[in-house]
Image (cartoon, rainbow, N blue to C red; front, side, top):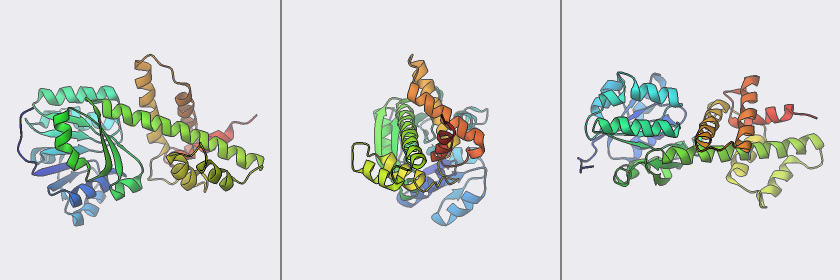
Length: 300
């Protein structure tokens, strides 16, 4: 890749639960102009006081931005934005950079890298981890799949939104790490939900005492201190956080990656089944800790 001009203008596509605060931090902490695009007008209105310029179309944003960030729900939306006839691949110009902060399959990241390269453009998968509050605070963890040159070019921009940025390897590696992270998280939440369900059903120990004790022992974890203490214990599974449907998608992508490697994962399969049952119970939009409701339904 040849040396390119200094980035002058950034674009951000997808201003949802995570994308809106990420775009706000990018505008506030970088020295570049930021254009935003979303089908909904509300987030663009909220971002206007932060200096984010509303693009009227994807084509307008792609034509103006040197680096385009994506934050979309999953594979169907990423495919539409990038690979449709009027999508970012068709609109790409030599030297342009597209950074996908969505969570999507590894195979799609590799497909997009090849498609943008064929247009003389560059691609990185850079999915984000941690909570919506971390997106607001600019303390996300971002795992990146791309070559070393592009990583060093985009790392300062990613650090406007994150406190941890890890170069994981070539295209697809960032997605692989994110998917396996969420798979482990979901399995851990299942274990915490089961422990809490036993404590409440048996009455042997106060649930708060249980979780406080776990936090002092070998079962301590980020999931316990955040998902356990803040959501499972108070039975608080709010919408507009990271919902059951999103975690179900991510665990499914992780299982897809595992199958491609010839592995049939048992614990992750259980997590997916409980998430499916939770969604079927009408809780698809609730925070993913709501899977405790499915745990409770399994009785002897």
